[in-house]
Length: 365
Ligand SMILES: Nc1nc2c(c(=O)[nH]1)N[C@H]1C(S)=C(S)[C@@H](COP(=O)(O)O)O[C@H]1N2
Ligand SMILES: [Mo]
View 1 (cartoon, rainbow, N blue to C red):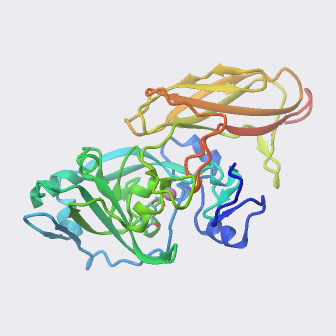
View 2 (view 1 turned 180 degrees about the horizontal axis):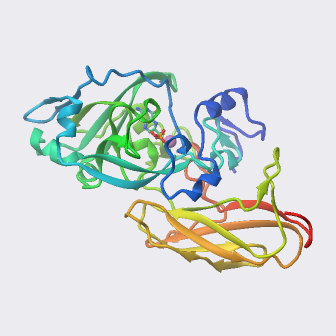
View 3 (view 1 turned 60 degrees about the horizontal axis):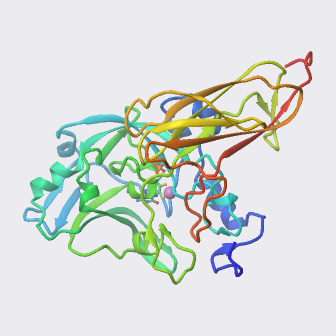
């Protein structure tokens, strides 16, 4: 923990009114929704920096310009007539885990549930840019949303860029459907970018403009937010791929206020899901109080979809337990006990812990 608390961070445990205001607008996925391999739309997490814009899809156009030989202005119907793919993708907010840090960035105070997996339908991005004929000296592609606001004292549209090498990945899509429905307002109606394997900030919603540029983009969401930094004066390193994480479906039933779980005595199957943007998850382990033990792990349904895991637990006695899970991916990255602190509060992927009371044998479940 740094000796001095930088501006824009809070050392106090209490959540401020401003943080609560953000938390009621941007909700996480209730952990019991981990049961669904594809998250029902209303249970998918939401992160909206400014206001949800109301967009008339009939009047809307996607402008493609900048360093291209053929600028384009496309209707939704034109985009939908292009080659179409549907793919399950797990998306997670880079700030997931932020509220567990101390001191923490004063921002959306996420705990662990800022994730969801949806079946997205759209068309690959790069062929569209190839048709526009991208200049040889292009460095990045900038994606501009329709939503506007003020952040860090800067009035802006939500805008992010991708280096050309990322934008060329065939799984990067322009999507107009989620789980078989047109994108609802909160998820980017009528079109969003989808960057599988990267934290959600890259997947720009309410997409209006794609601009090819020769220099690294210096917009707020690129050059100031979403960077690994210890200090506000540091330039930092951009946040990109999703670090490995696993979550557990909380077993039994919750106590209303604390959400502590109450589980009947006897065998208890622990289940959950795990994912990483650095390759498939190759191992999930569970600690029920006596060390890490391997869980059973399913393969992913698609390269960027989460994987189901399970672990048969036999509580040795009634009483209080803390259950934890952790994942390791094919790149060798593993959920650390304590991730390195950073100013923005990004990617705290320390293990998910669930507090459980096992009822005495013979007690009614
Ligand atoms: N235009 C726009 N795109 C955006 C955002 C935004 O505020 N405006 N939020 C980003 C962030 S930080 C995340 S985590 C994801 C959340 O996507 P979802 O709300 O569909 O789950 O959208 C990203 N795309
Ligand atoms: Mo996010």
